[in-house]
Image (tube, rainbow, N blue to C red; front, side, top):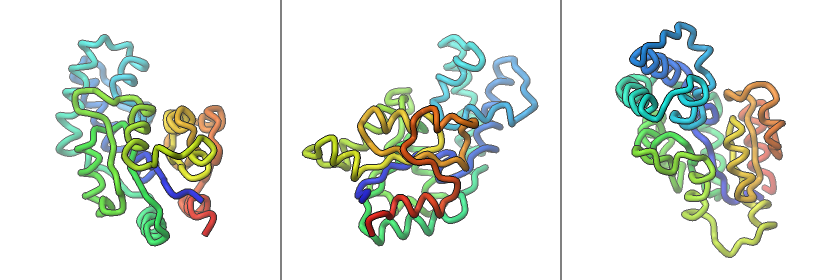
Length: 223
């Protein structure tokens, strides 16, 4: 039974496409790049922003700093609310808590913004712990976020076998799967997020689900 469950946020609990891609578009424009097609900016959903600006646009550290500043200029006031919660998430979280699961958020998004999103959708109280990155860029890798969430919520005495059996990490991108594998957790990939075709399989997800109902069934196993 999964007693401890970590959730990614963007693309897993909520669909943030419009807010994130529009804010990336805004940041790129400030850096002299015009990208009219928001669909092309979907790969920014999930990974740390700095990594994405460097990988997809070859930005230098100085350009990354400006791009992130401009991204936040729009996202923190407008883009954060251009977001929708996937149907069935509220019910699933409620059922998990009723069945004594301990829940945490493990997101690459800065913690203050994670909290604002959870409060906006009235689901913050379901989570025992909320862990994100720092606004100054620290704890930006998913492995680091998962490590901190585990430190807070999971007994240190668990051996490797027990950890695999009772701790699950849920996410929509390879970074979530890799974060789970780095710490010996069961990884659950959701295909309704923003992973390109085949990404979750290639990352070695233990489970891949297509719907929130399927996700709930796996997380509730043992009851």
